[in-house]
Amino acid sequence: MRPCLLFLLMLAAIVQLSGCGAWRNYDLELQQTTDQLKQGNPEGALYVLEAYNPDEEKDLLYYFEKGAVLSLDGALAQSQVAWRSAEQMIIQRQDTLQTTTDKLLAAMGDHWGSIINDKVRRYEGYDYEKVMLTTQMALNQLAENDFDGARADIKKTHEREALIARQRELEYERVEDAAKSQGARVHYTDLQGYPVVMLDSPAVIALKNGYQSAFSHYLAGFTYEALGEKDLAAPGYRQAIELRPDITFFQQALKDLDSPGLKADESDVLIIVQSGLAPARSSVRVPYPVKLADGQVIVANISFPVMVPDTSTASFNRVNIDGRQKALIAVNSITDMSLRTLRDDMPGIVQRTTYRAFLAADVQGTDNRRNPAKASYVTHWDGFEHADTRTWRTLPNLTQVVRLRLKKGDHLISLPNTQSASPLKIRIDQNRQVIALRALGKLIYVNGSAFQSNPSLESRVSGLK
Image (cartoon, rainbow, N blue to C red; front, side, top):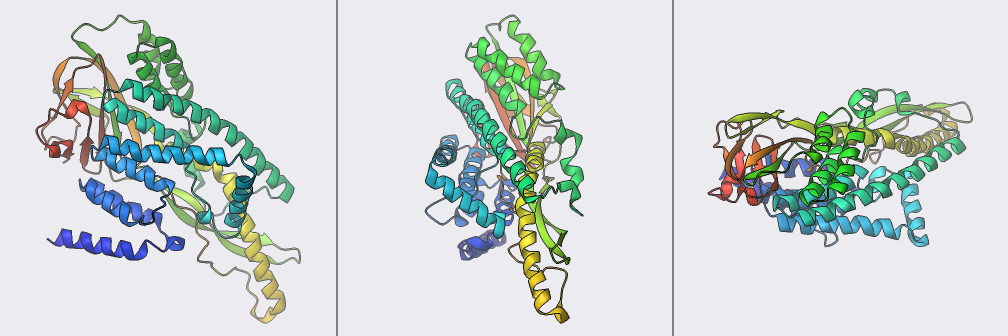
């Protein structure tokens, strides 16, 4: 009874605080949501999410998170509805920004965000979130062997990548021009106390950008191949190779396009294991010295975002099929993508944040001139000066895969740390089939038609040691 009572008390507190949008702590909200998922309680996670979002008009993050929670709960159709709402919101914002009025409103939002805080800016979603949205939607379709439906979502992924590439090119040019006009050329490496090493790690720098996923393009290739469209499968595999030339798994898929066909009793099976959560965003305070025209040097305490990787899920690199271990190949890391995105976004963030530092220092400098006896050369801490910590937290972090040929029929599957739970039965009955598992905390979530032969709903969530 005590856990139930604590859960109800937590919900009551959430309802009390959910209306205070200006002070919303998104990281705390999602920590409570994901805690429920780690306990094997997706229904509780959904209750928490709904309680924090009581307004009739929902934001983009609500639909991101809701779709992920519903997918974990096996409600794939409802998950698609939530994610379609997110997709439509993204499309509408892209379209409306083309009008003069909305361009003006967007500019005003940027202006007030520069003066007050990035958190007051409307959340548009990070580029990698928009791309992974349609990838996760395709995985929902593939779990039900709907390759045609997955094909449609994969096509949207390609179109979105092309649009993002054009938008980013224009945005980075705008930021560069603004920095030149202001005479401000501050780089994030100049910020004292900022954890530069994370943004400059080899894995982050190796990525071409923060939004193109080699896994998404490989999945496109597999889907087109399953539909008999080898002329489209090859470009998908080639794009995956171009993005991650170090992964021979992608190169092998392109070579195997010309291999002999399947036997009558065989299936080409792609096992996808996604684990963990996307990293959280946190805020770090950095002292920034501002030299005013009158010679005063005022230190402004300003905030910048940092990524905090999720450590709640133990790492593993193998899957057990019918008692035989198969190596998993890591093909996507949301941690790396988010760090690369932050690295690429830092010039704009620095521009906006240092602008606020100059404003705060100018106010302090004016006070100093008016009352030299009480002069201070450090700005007063502003409660609004806090980095934007909103991000899609329920997005799976690491994606690993293995592809193999299995005979059609029933098979047993488990992950290395699941010896305490019975292996899950999967039904292979298609010529090409996708089997997806999600490891979260000490649990394994599964869904889709391949797992329908399991005797109970509880078997979709297996306990780890």
